Image: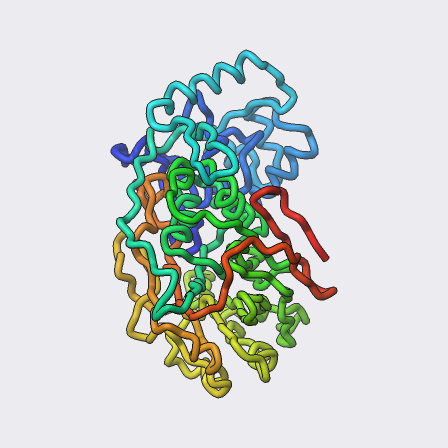
Length: 486
């Protein structure tokens, strides 16, 4: 998968067919609106912006214009109507016409719909059947994989030894950070991505996860709902502790780039004695020449873990090279590149606070001079500069140290000495990878650190407390609808 998860490549009919067909697709797409009768055609009356961007010459602005125009007219009646969209015209229509089809939203042909559903069931019945798990609140329903990808999802999870629940007779809790790389709801709906994220949390016994680079808050809810009420067989069939998961996504963007807004979030197992006290976005005083704030903001979460308190600062700084733009064939350094540094507000907010973890994507190795303010506050990086934290199918061992967990001196006393960069189990047959399949869920590895804790593993009843300026969404096992509490 490309660095921004928006890289384009042809859509092979299956993993064995890697011939270029002229059709391009984004790794964030769920492929739910590819025509069932012709896998090469995209239904422009139902496709999302990300899926429309897989068409040749269609940028995000044009894709958004298609969606807006479609909403105004109630759906396209014929393919030629797409030419009326601003940014399309006759020339571009001829380019994308072989790749698209229409299915009117007003059309209500039940027989046709049933025929398509039966076709999906027949083609996938051999690989997906309903299953249930004794600890699951509901049995898994039949999963219908959209056409165009592998005919079955024979994913193989790594053989992972269950991590110990205690060390030296003391209970431990595992905290992780994961940059999910432009993770939209479409990407979170991809069954391969969903399996990788959920099974990684369960297999590695991760109880608190900080997530970066979400393109919308709903993406995090998808993973939370899957953990609580699984639909994937591999998640249903998990034999270990399942937990009761909740999530919180920042109510406002924590970053802006040429690709759009990004959000941060937390995902935690409340049955492990973890409660969210409050979550706030740390405002930044830095602004560009136009007065708009371009400094990435940290998402700060105050948690109770048993009787102890933990403050987690969730940050996302892009590597300097990621902010370079090409204009007229020349490299151009934007304001984004100049200002993507650790905000002074982070260190100011941490003064006098004990048990602090600063986690996320830092864009640079920890020995960079930019992180001197963290060192002055007596924080130390758990991942050394010599350890790579990125991954791809071509470079499974990575090449750069971009992500980390910084621990304060007080929390370092509770550190068990176990911190790992996870590399196994991050690929799936249903995740695109250039001209083929089997890509990684993100080009960033999850990082897991282990700390001693006095957690009591029982379901907590106390609801999170929030300050007036934050907005937290919580999802529980018995209620998969997000609750917005203020």
